[in-house]
Image 1 (cartoon, one colour):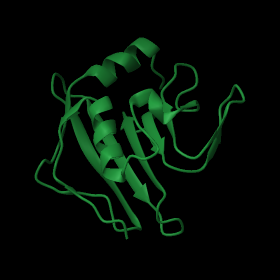
Image 2: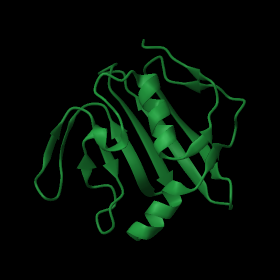
Image 3: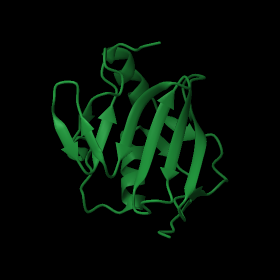
Length: 145
């Protein structure tokens, strides 16, 4: 299944909340991986938010927002390399945003959504939640190691 750009824009603009506001969001210690459900407030649309920090590169992490299980709307990678279909290359932090006809194959500078290379993991997480129009977020517990 694919979306039009208009559908993507509408989905991203919908107000959303975490399904379970009582469970703490853990951003560490590495390795850690979790999936949280997010619900639209105006309809029954369900989104999934993935967080991953591996054990090999402890500072590296990924935040991924999905729609209908498989459609990646946004993916933040704080490290690594990526080459877009048009040949544009990224080293380090970059953001994947859904693009009609390409799904999440295009990456953009993190400044596209108001992020900065110096932002902490917690700041990045909160800015991404704001960009995704997620209004209520559980408490965040931060651990670097």
